Image (cartoon, rainbow, N blue to C red; front, side):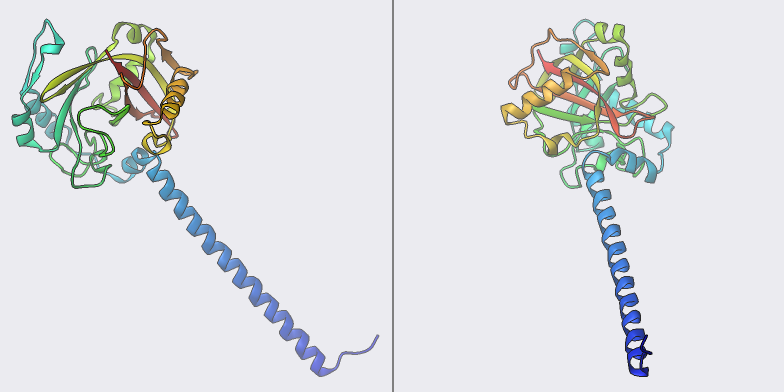
Length: 274
């Protein structure tokens, strides 16, 4: 075999070094792309329905006694008629003096769910996920909706969010609907607005995936509305009352909260206007 000249030896060594540098560059670029993609995925997950877990990991919890006092004060603005829930009245002027973002009130008989509903007009949609009724940062946040939904609950689907708090506050009691007897005996949800009261009948309380509902469907399209309704009714984990008639006109009120040991799923109680 012919021996390499000094020139050939030098050129071969340079070629090897060049290849090694190229490989290093390729590896670095690949790592950058993967990190970038990971960041993109992280942002996508945050904006596609995993906001609650992100917020709970990075947000302090507010003083529970202070929060309870604030809600007790707000509940004093509600005039209760024991005979007819439709005659319950909320003094919205007094409630909005505490927080101008209060625009509705939700009450579910048989549960602790008796709270104002908020929607921020100036902050990001998820603001009240981790801001309390006095706008302090921290859990338990509030019961809230996003600006996507109309304030008069006229949309085909309105999604209302609330944390599943260990102390039983916010939307924790939605999990009572996991029990078939409770589901059967507590079918009504009431929404109070300044100019009207809306009565909803529960038709499905189910486990659902963590898709960002308002971004994954266009509920103004009949086919998207029907697809969502079919998915709710076909859920294998939960309860469905197939006798309740649900249309785009009667709409769907979706109450969404977390499932403690299943961060990639949501527990959703769904009702339609009577």
